[in-house]
Length: 357
Ligand SMILES: Nc1ncnc2c1ncn2[C@@H]1O[C@H](COP(=O)(O)OP(=O)(O)OP(=O)(O)O)[C@@H](O)[C@H]1O
Ligand SMILES: [Mg+2]
Image (cartoon, rainbow, N blue to C red; front, side, top):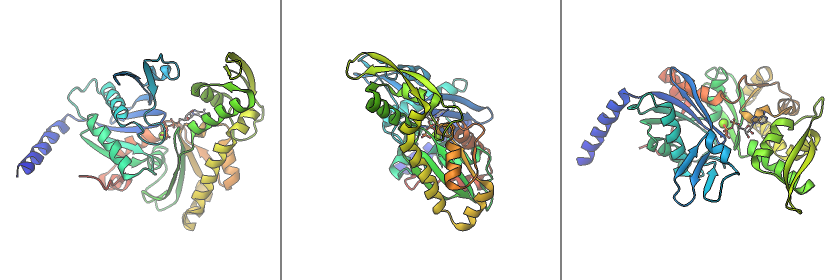
């Protein structure tokens, strides 16, 4: 009885709060978090990084400020990426990060509790989904709906996902690469592998260590990948001076690396990404696969910007490959657009969570 009254009160309370609420779409990425505010567009784009005081776990900095501290913190502070290995690897820190970002975009609406659509990797478990929902609710959301990242990306790049025809998207992020074939608003086939941009960085670190005894950090590895990394021979090969620490002498050292070397270093993760594209096509029903011959594959996510990756996938799959106009915002734009959709279509796109109560 008391429980019933409590539930009813809670509903009324949430309803009243909802009157002040704003709707927002969030791409809670392993590298970058983006927020879309209904009626305003993309209002926040910051690294998914939190700096904590080691002893007390107090949050010292979030986002851009915290990223600057990665690999450079004094002993008493740690900068971490709470989403790094796929989904939420650190529950409490993710919540603190979300809370900070929500507060930042909501400064103008003090009373508001936002209704959220959050993009999640398609391969995550029910427990992981629950963790995302809980984090968002505890960070102040009045309601949370989840949408699979590749669906959001497909909506965001403007693919006609509600048509009865096959659309294929590959979203290469930091932690995961997501593959999806979508028709009639649903995922006909989805695949998620935990190989993406971070894995490429790790391969560069390994390569330089093995070949030159040179130790570099994650940020340097990412810079090398962005400046001279490739997945297909370049018309003009590139070079770059790389600074690190000599593992034997223990002293700082600079060496010159070429784009050919980095391509070799990236071979393994790139091949894994290409192979999973082929596996996705093999699992696509024939009618939809034949649609893809004309429509091709659309790539999104920061990893799709690796030089020549589009060409490599096109060559190995035999299909045309297009890179989204703005690969980094595709997912968040997709979450934003679902906020404006008619309920009927939105229901089809949103992931039902079994643990809802
Ligand atoms: N020009 C570029 N060339 C190669 N890689 C790039 C480039 N620009 C960004 N990246 C990489 O893209 C990745 C980040 O992409 P994105 O922001 O889409 O990831 P995310 O959404 O945070 O991660 P996820 O989707 O896995 O949760 C990083 O690994 C980054 O190094
Ligand atoms: Mg992403």
